[in-house]
Length: 251
Ligand code: GLN
Picture (cartoon, rainbow, N blue to C red):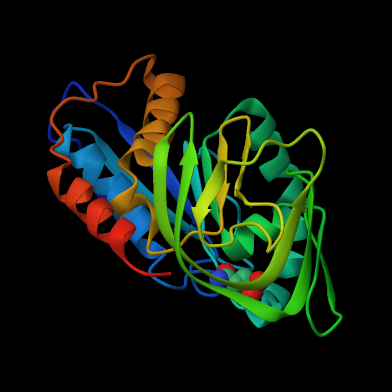
């Protein structure tokens, strides 16, 4: 893996979190990189440092990782990374079960499940971290989404996918859809929630408009590493305004 960006803590009494972005070359569409930037900036505002690492196909998986972010990608990009993803799967499973916080969007959300059958019949095996299956269809689910969750309140984002995801019985959805489709065209559920993993179809990117999810990931990572998280010092009025406007937009 390559270290793409390091910012030292502005407050010397605070530490640095190591954030790993999975497959930024292929799995990074509709602004998903914005999720990494939000995590880095929310750490900086609080005096913490951030080290951003990238894992692309063929890289050696890093030793210490505090938080993992994976974005979306086209079916063709998912085919390109599938062998490498299987190669690092044991490590990802271990990290997930230990409680490492992870944000998985769309294409990588699908591949953390059991399998993805694309609309042209290809079967891309998943890594089974999340008990779910995805089936490609001819219909694309596209548009603005509003969903509600007890844990994070109202969630705003944008979806664009042909894969429709069905969760296994024991897996909880992230949210209930108010506007848009979410996991599939039938059930009115969006995303999945397991251990410290937040998985979602929503781009936009997700975290700028959903700081509660960003802070869940950061707090979990910081508490695991430092024993506490000092979360004061962030003004979310712009995020609130963005949520208000996004929520008022047509589908
Ligand atoms: N290729 C997948 C699909 O269309 C994921 C798309 C995405 O990441 N937006 O279902």
